Image (cartoon, rainbow, N blue to C red; front, side, top):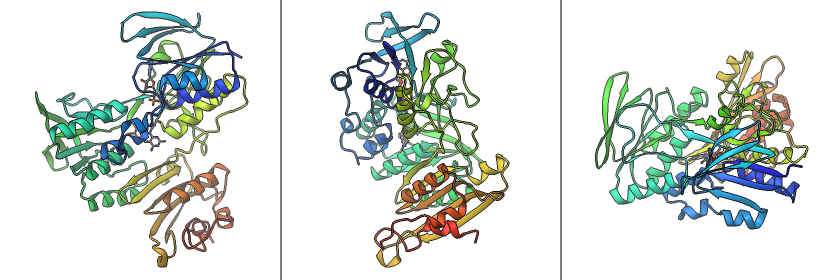
Length: 450
Ligand code: FAD
């Protein structure tokens, strides 16, 4: 077992790795360097703080360095940036951001859990006061303070992926007029267009001015702050007034340190790792959003940066680095977002992705109530995708106002274990009218090829 483990990054993957390593070995010296102030936070909860559903940001940042020191004997150094790695000498150069001084630390094993950074569009007017990305607790505090101090009334959210939609929903809850600008034809373009069109309708039904096929071309601001955005769609340019702009157009992995260390990146641009989360350079490991994974269905390299995967790969890394048996088994990119009263989720391949991967695709659609109508059942839309040649399930998308999460997870589990469509009908699922129908919507998907 290693004597010294150095971890870079202290949110989901870095802390999971350190905690698991510590459980496996009492003796190792484990240090985490984190350039930010907040650690081990729930980034996923940030929109709900902005919207007021989470009263205090402290609820999202429950862990402190003192807690990690006491509970795990892990030394978390915030405000410390790792600026370079010498993989041959097994040293890192660390800058104390408070003093500006740098020092060298040595490692037996190095963990890169450096995460991602939000993409900021290269348009005139950015940066400007009142234009935000959403990644860290400080971002959420800043947005909250801006809305309060400026009495902000109108927000433009750029990007209709899941973070953009969560922010849009929460800003509506906070009483703002919200416009969402999306360059693609639909919101939630990770789903197939027939499913994401339902998300478009849901946003509009809740008062969101959704502008698809619309590109941000500029941000307008005075010295005092943002005043609006300029967008272009098929009809030409338009100006949208705003006193708050949230940019959520995607993220890129923080791979600078890895590249400097000579670590190979995969075809997705994230760090290539093996199933134990080891990189191409000896004694250098990577997990979480910065690391590439592989698609459980196709076996191809895949990069879907999610907290669920970051916690899992961090734990696998922490085990493997201390000689344990855990190996990563791949991802389906399973994810879900709430859009007002709808749950919207997907797992595995979409129809579009399955066709692109060369499958002869069978599409299975059903719309069934999630419970009997006499107990308030509401339509649940399931679109599943199967391989016509073998009947094997490749992916599923689910939209519904209740029970969407359960069906999505059942389908993700089935796909994980290689189920074919007919297997779904035979699943022994729980039934009571309070929760499901005698034949569950998942069973109906399993009957679609009969
Ligand atoms: P990060 O959280 O990016 O942490 C990496 C850390 O490394 C950062 O703190 C960074 O400062 C530090 N670092 C980088 N380079 C250095 C360096 N050189 N020296 C020192 N420190 C460094 N996921 C879900 O699964 N479900 C959700 O519902 C969901 N919702 C989300 C909502 C929002 C608004 C956001 C922002 C994210 C959401 N996520 C969600 C994603 C989830 O938060 C991330 O997948 C998770 O935080 C990834 O953890 P990580 O440890 O890999 O990386």
